[in-house]
Amino acid sequence: MARKTKAGNGQAGRSSATRERLLDAAERLFAQRGLDAVSVRDITRAAGASLGAITYHFGAMRKLVVAVFDRRMAPLTRQRLEALSAVEKAAGTGPLPLEAVLEAMFRPAVMEAMTGERAGVVFGKLMARSMMDPNPNLEKYIHSQVEPVIRRFDAALLRAVPELTPEDVFWRMHLLVGGLHQSLLMMDRKPPAGLPRLRLDAETYVRRFVAFATAMFRARLPKA
Amino acid sequence: MARKTKAGNGQAGRSSATRERLLDAAERLFAQRGLDAVSVRDITRAAGASLGAITYHFGAMRKLVVAVFDRRMAPLTRQRLEALSAVEKAAGTGPLPLEAVLEAMFRPAVMEAMTGERAGVVFGKLMARSMMDPNPNLEKYIHSQVEPVIRRFDAALLRAVPELTPEDVFWRMHLLVGGLHQSLLMMDRKPPAGLPRLRLDAETYVRRFVAFATAMFRARLPKA
DNA sequence: ACGCGGTTAATACGAGTGTATTAATGATAC
DNA sequence: GTATCATTAATACACTCGTATTAACCGCGT
Image: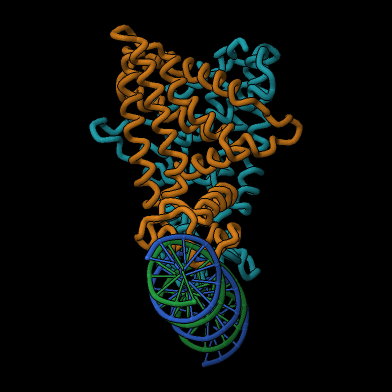
């Protein structure tokens, strides 16, 4: 059934039907139940593949986890950095517009989470959960993706709001990231009995979030 | 070695030396490694107890998890509600001061996380991780604690910022909770190579966070 | 027609899981 | 001093986990 793969090496085949099904099933299950609550058998069963499929296509369960993240996160990182570059280019040597920088950071994430090819906020939930997860294997990968983003955006934010210290920028940035994840995660949980489910389209979501983020970055520290 | 327990029932003893050691060890391990990565054997070994100790004192692993949370979270919930009541009483029938309401919400959590009896942000980390965790057993307990808090505070915030809709208040609140957790979690992770670790005392932390939160609640929605 | 290589299927293995069971312990009440 | 009872210790059990191993499968080039 070797349809697409040409590469000869045993288990690093870049694409195949079952390989994709495994990634899809794993992503969905991870988002639903959390990483640790999903077994190899759960995934292969959901993907209609045999037990050995994961070992064959990914070498080990660990690597499949990373692959699941990489498929969504690498493009996300790229989009963020490109958007920031565009903002920087537009600003020339002048001051960077704070709101545009924050939008470059958060729009790609919200779009990926809410309007990706997979319905619902599958990867958004997954991201939210995994940023908190102490899984050392995954933490290394995520850090490798997040680090350059944080670094570039922190620098840009320092240019946009020069009166803040680097530590302060770093801190506020993480606050916003945490807030984004929490709110994404909450989107598909049912609200506390009485409140209607908050149904925002992605565009409105982005605009609101950026507005809040901007307000938070402009807030002055208390005097003490 | 029955020192304190009098109650006759086999396994609902309310306090004992090993029972406390189990809770302490479990809390620490959970915070370090995450709930799912800690086994009964890990905990009993760390607590210097025998394997059966958890079953004996808590009935089952599940219940120990809930007990770990309850020990910290029940007082936290109480403090929050009391602080809010004080704010409401001070305001009488007049408008509620936004900043005071937000402080009532977040000061107890930060204090618990940063100045609790256990050094470091042990429970803070644990909380942050577990809010995201889909563990259904725990989710039920956490929800039972969080629900009345959210309900009371949402009402208060509506009084404090009457121009916002209930959904909007709910949403901003969750954003802040997520931000708090992320920033707490980040406190004891080493910063990204270059930045000095952000070392804030709890009081400064609270004041800054409340300042940001206030700014975020005062932000107006974008026109669209 | 034939085997060859990439893929899938089926099973086995050792390690680790939570809990139940049963025996030992040791302090306290009578 | 001894019976009692809460606690601790030690072991057993049934189960699930990820991975390795081996055999079947099958389209394709020759």
